[in-house]
Amino acid sequence: MIDETGIRDTLEGGYLDPTSLSLSATLITRIEDWLRCYETAHADGYSDESVTAGLDEEGIAICHLIHRELGDIKIQYFSEAKAEVVLLPLIERQ
Image (cartoon, rainbow, N blue to C red; front, side, top):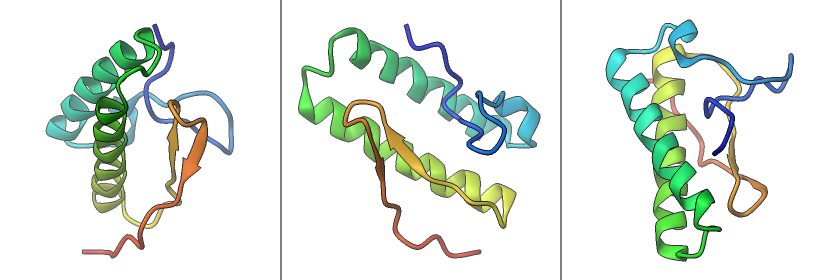
């Protein structure tokens, strides 16, 4: 099991509780659902590349939603399966 919340604080270290970030309930639920699916893929050793790709796509979409809800923050996506930071397309303020 992954002992994380899905949101890492790269400045202070550790992980942030999504409920402490003033995110919408819908987005918090989406993060929790995504994290459960990622934990399952992790337990399976990321053996299905299509599942892993879909989880990374969802993680990137979640990054965009977090940025939209919180505004001017620096956000990046780290793929546990690939063990690398994934460059995000430019996130526009809406």
